[in-house]
Image (cartoon, rainbow, N blue to C red; front, side, top):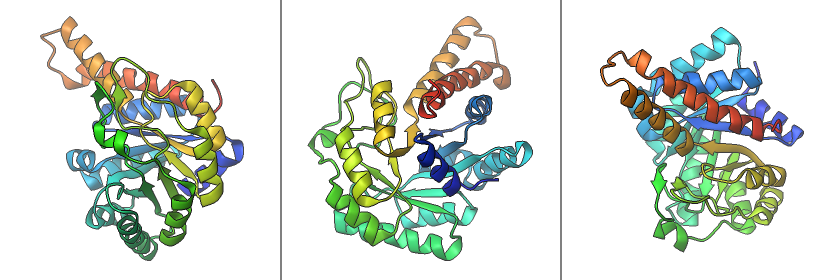
Length: 287
């Protein structure tokens, strides 16, 4: 079975990107796996601190690992947006494939120092755990937005110079820049366009595979151009949360007496599968 590091390297070689999708429930996990299996492409499951707390740090690891082992499929687990060394250590110790330390709210110097601690800990425990660092604030909420949060509009996008310094001094395996992306989806319009030349410059200067956070609401054209420019992993969360919720609402509107969760959530699983299928097809150059 390939490792996540090998899957990323293969994606870069092919000029495509891996899809990263968050889960809070088992039906969403199956929906994501169903789509990846149908297209026969690797996929990354993400769980934020809140999602890990809800499902269980070790329990979600066991779920993803069981799919990998039973079906011999390249499905990987990432500890998404860890805001402290302790939370990052917890995921590393549990055997996750990757962990993100999110120090985007810190100063550059503080972010470098904290991220470096996570990298050093991961190397001491298991050299196969990839560590991702993040530089540039893009918000923190995977939700439907009426407007871009003021904190995001006032933030500064990542520069190639700062990216190079960050990657060099921390030793991260993956790097997530702010390039016009935002967490969440705008309610009535597409999210802002990505700064494609900035992505190209950051990838060339830093030398690290790049991760695009806040992919929900981004246009297909921007995705394609961003991947060509050097994005290796794309995060999608809000889109599948919305699809999951809409399918749940529709089911309950049609059958208010339903009480069996496995019947109620079947539609949500399929709704997640459809969204993930289209995204993976696009990211893999099959669209």
